[in-house]
Image 1 (cartoon, one colour):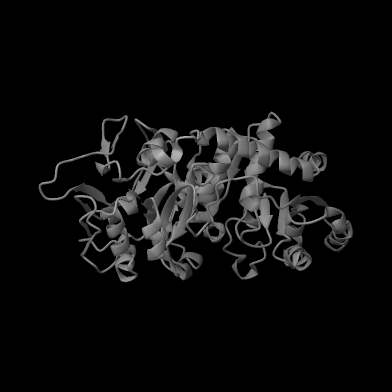
Image 2 (spheres, rainbow, N blue to C red; image 1 turned 90 degrees about the vertical axis):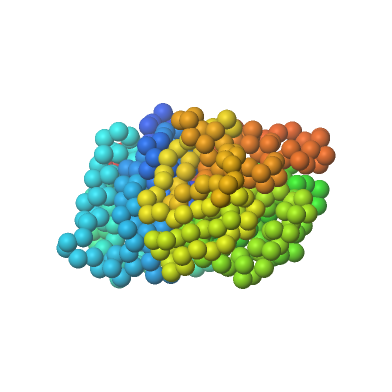
Length: 482
């Protein structure tokens, strides 16, 4: 288990690295995180929902993702409430207090996540486990499902990951270990210092001090990198994205919705040398973009209301009139229609709200979530959404995609105005090329981009980077000593 001194210390990326390393070394690894909290999710081949990070780690391991890799997913609805997804299916919404102080009549989540681990461990070896947040939230120790209690069930060797870039690494590592019970301290077999900048020789004394005060070996000091690109699900990653127009490329603006979800849909575009992608809710930046993308959202009606309030709605509509391309994905597709209706009040108290009117479609929110992987003429993707969208009034169907199971998806007005429910469609080079066709004059001397080959290259680069800076012989010895 890769556990952390806090959030965003790099646990997910380190776990992905070891999924690839173990695969390279001839093992059959699989990722596991008992409980994840994220708006970035993914559909398994069975059409069930898990956290995006575990899907990425499974890809690094070279295996299909499965709900047993992330049996419990919490998708925030507000500051206090989350949708609870158990074994890939939503089971309702809970506020934080009710979730952590659940009564005896509620579902036994601990039994569920332990059972999922046991099933996974029968099929793969080793299991690369990931903790959540900090392991030293001692006020939640009795209800913790994902950190040391899960490690005890799995009989896992715990490697503590600390982030030196944010400062205070000695206190955070030492304190994280010191706050554990004597039983749990014995599970912590090593320390990895992540995101180091500068000359590592200057930290030799620091390594010795850490080992002395913690009584645990420092297995590696991993330098900060900028030239390796792995999809990240944590919203903290959005702060590192680009937020402005750039000259000399096709500028694509992703509208920064308040409840944006599945923003990893755009990672492929960020790496395409033909494109500059940026995130914004600034009306002037929206007007300067060549292509505007409305992303997925966890709250379509709220974000539609906000777009009208902050002026972005009018800026998008005017940009379309001026010849800018507009693409909506999932909730963004719903936003582009004539109206969004919520007669069952699934998202709130508003029954109906006019959409942007860019597509002649109407959306009605429904209580059943659709999750499935799909294939179409452009390649593969997946659906995760509630609501049904259909032509408005007398408008005729004009599907953007034709799915392999015979269904049709989305709506296209022309090659500069379209929407789809399919996440991951932009991972397919053929669709990106179609999206960029109106801008051929800017692309004449630039090659197309193979995102799947790029991702494989990044997993291998990440594995090589971690190998160089972690004592693999000592780590393997830890894993075999038991």
